[in-house]
Structure formats: structure tokens, C-alpha cells
Amino acid sequence: MFSAMIPTNNELTGMDERGRCWLSDQQWAAYFEQARQGKDRSILFHEMVSAELARCGPGATLLDIGCGRGIGAGRVLQESLAGAAGRFIGIEPDRDVAVSDCFCQVHRCTLEEAPLEAGSIDVAMAAFVLEHVADPASFFRKLHEVLGRRGVFWAMTIDKRHPFALLSNLAQRMWLKRPLLAWVRRGGPAENVETYPTFYRSNTPRALARHAAAFGERRWLSLNYVGQHDAYLPQVLHRFAHAADRMARSLRLPGPTAIVRLSKGTVQSTR
Image (cartoon, rainbow, N blue to C red; front, top):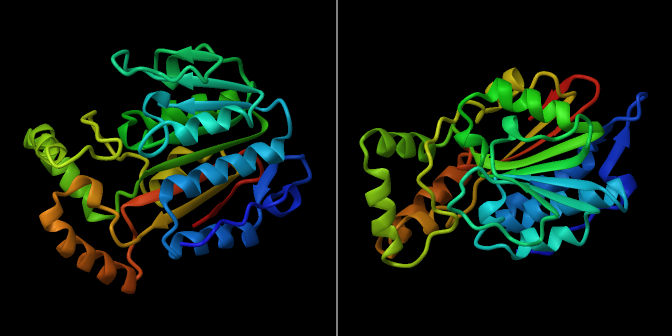
């Protein structure tokens, strides 16, 4: 693992003729290389959002959709973003989940139901939320509405093209998901383990392009590294899972995790 290059404002983005944001191919390639080298997905995602806030400048409004469980295995990364944002707004529909006090405002509802003003958000993010969205058309319509003219959305989610999504859906349909996760937890807490219903309706590049067609730029980064399933498997299976991870990497197959960036602007799509 190597340290990430934090881009400057000029390196991170350019502006089209309407003053809207796009991410340079060079910076996206740098993110891709960090992912290829095995950089921790949560740290990489945090640095992407942090760099976006730096581009926006002081006073930017950041929205965290599904904010209750933080980013990765805790809230340290999430709370560090509060200092970089002028306003930090959270959305958490699960009232049983406690929310960090780093937010200046929290809405206990879905994004679609949140009373957010149109064009009021500079940067929105969602960590492992898209796979739970039952109606992507409504979700992305509201997201597009609340983002400002140069607004950007970052998401970390599950790549449906990977067998993990298929197995997760199968376990859910067979009512095995909760007992399986409870079994894993006996060996130690899993990272952001949850049992909310999953749908994966916008979790491929093609599906995202269809549901988020109103966004000018769409980028998709699939992460595939050794040990990516350790949080969901008992220790005895780690060796076999690592062998499968190495094979998938050598074949350049999609990984189980994807990072997505959407921005308003001239319509184009990049994978």
C-alpha cells in the first residue's frame, strides 16, 4: 500500500463551457492505480470526497446519504470530513441507528423524502447505499435536483457483476442472510455488516447510465484486491477466498466493490 496523491484543484477537475465540473482522465487514472495497488477502499473513498471538497473551497455543503454507520469500520473518516465542509448534512432513515454529532442537520428519512432545497448541495456521498435503493429513478431524480450547478456525487457500493452480489441476493431470498452474518460476527465484528434488503438495480455501469442519464459525467471504478471478503467470512475460509481474489485480479474481472462519481454537465459516460 502506498500513500495517495491528493490532487490540487486544477489537477482534480476541469470546467466545461457552462462552468460545470468534470474529473480529468489523469486524476481518474491515478485513483485507478491506487485501487490496483490495493489501497484500502474506505481510505480511497474518503480521499476522493476530501479532494472534491477542496475543489469546492471553504463553505461547501456536504450531504451524507445513509450516514448512520460512517465510512468503513467506524466514523473516524466520516467525522474528519466535517472539518473540511462548511455544512455537513446527514440522511439516515433507520431510527435505530445512532448518528454522529458531527452533522449540523440530520434527516431521519430517505433521500427522496428529505426536505432539501433544490441546488443546495455541493457534494453528496453515499457509502454502501445504492445497493439498497429500490427505485433508482426516484433516487437519482432527487439527487440531481438537490445538487448545485457544479454538484458532484460520490458513492461506494457493490458491483452487481461480481458473484458476491449474486450470493448476497440468494442468501436474502432463502432467509439465510441474517443467520449467516450472525455466524460471522461470532468471530469478530464485520465491517458495516447489515441486513437491509438489497436490490442492486443501479449497480452496473449500464444500469447506472440508464438511471442517472441526467448527469453529464458518470465514472465507475471497480475495486478488486486480495482479502476483500475477509470481513464477511470466518477465518478458516480466508485462505481459499484469497486464492480466488488473486485469480480474479489476474483475469481482470470486476471486483465486488465499485466507486462511482456523477456530476452535472455535458452528457458523457466513462468506465
